[in-house]
Length: 244
Length: 224
Image (cartoon, rainbow over all chains, first blue to last red; front, side, top):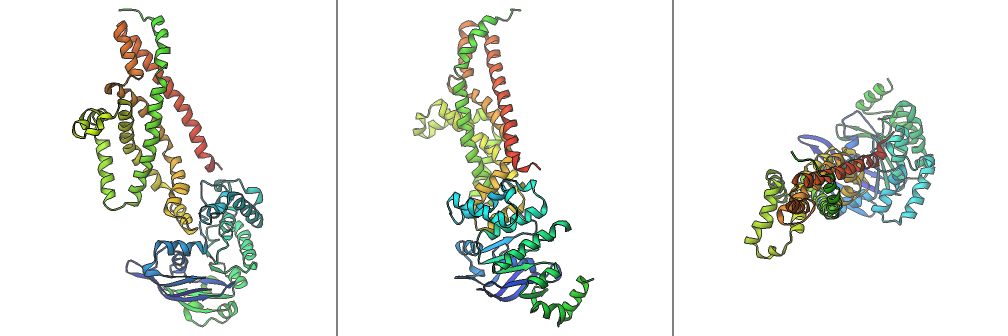
């Protein structure tokens, strides 16, 4: 169970997140859509303190953190309960695909090396990259790098997986394989919070869709409600634009 | 003009070579200590701990701003007059200490620049999986910075290797000191110092080969 209340973030004078309230059930797949610069990515980044929220409460499983006075250990606690998939993959450039996945298992979860390696290989097999275990990121295509990036987050067995526009930096030819892998992650009943511009994918994978505008969740509902019967004029305009 | 006495030079080579371990030892010890200190200084310069940052800036400024020879004299001959327990420090230790402090100041700046050059996404990825600051630095950032800093660091190591000859001025009989003593007996200064120069040169050339290997090794993750 994930619970967010009153989450607020300001960059300088500009409020980027304005009192966000959001509950996510275990195994629920929530997709956030909305125009650029409306705080979608910032919301994800505030949940694990890559950006530090100014105020609000974040509960993930048994850990509740008051953003305004979060201590170091609490921040690490949130990060260890979440897996993050970056738009630009952000694989560790000095480590192989397998080492990228093992890294958190060894240094953070303190698993024995052999066990971590076995789990990394199992995850690589799931991502379809078993034969790339010893390849460095520089030698992988964008699609392969992002699959390793997802694998790195999968291996954590995190309570919540965060996807920050995972296909936006990809050449069109690689988008399909990354979305396929995300579908497989979804089948495992993994709780997911996804920011994406892939509307077809959102409709297909989401239990619930949030539409954000100007740092607020303006409207939310099932894919059918959001895409077929949008209420808010801003959502209607947005959908008209993206369906072009 | 007198002809070069090759026989004398050849005879001198094994004598001077006998001091190579001491020279290499001082350089290696100095390099290891300087690297550790420089990495600490560089990390501090990046994360900027209040007060400490000011001290680090002062440290780097002083050791870059004054000649190595002056620093060695200051610490070996000068400081013991003020701080009595330092009188027990021998020339070799003092030389290693001086080389460490001096070169750490230079190397800190190139490591700092290399750290800043590591892509921001690498920091974020490490943070996102819950690494502590230390883990992030030691396992992700510094290894990548090392690749960028390696050529300049090897350069400093070469400089340090040659800098060990200054230990001679602290009464240490290393390669330079040995040659000086030999020459004082034979009056063949040119031959003696030529032998020393050639041996330094060969050592530095060998290091340059090592540099190529090191750079290939550090680059292996970045080959497409």
